[in-house]
Length: 118
Image 1: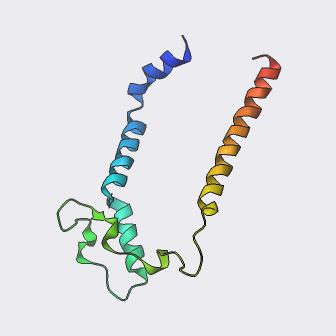
Image 2: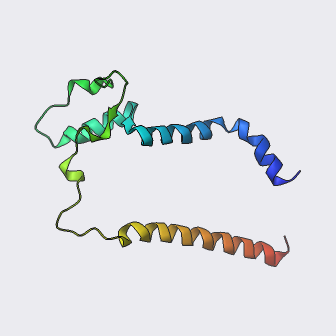
Image 3: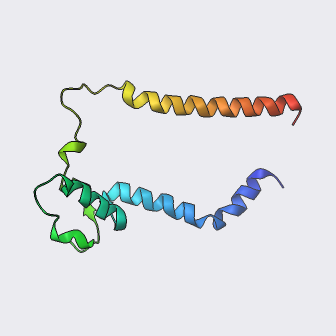
């Protein structure tokens, strides 16, 4: 059998990763958090605040959906420093390093196999 047919036949047994990717996309699209992440965000938002956590800390939002939107409150410690300029290189350099590392690993592993005759 070729690799592609094995991959296609294995897709139904990969339901957990497929559902996890779909759920992550749903959370990113709706901007809601649930469960432990919701409680951790609420703790971090109110950690440095003089106000106690909201009565919604039981995990239920006001609309009853069980989540909260990310924009409900912002911790000032999470905001970027206004005195430091935002530079594009700070976003591009880590991604570029990762892509170059992956391509280098693929090339070196493939070249070694090519050299050995596989």
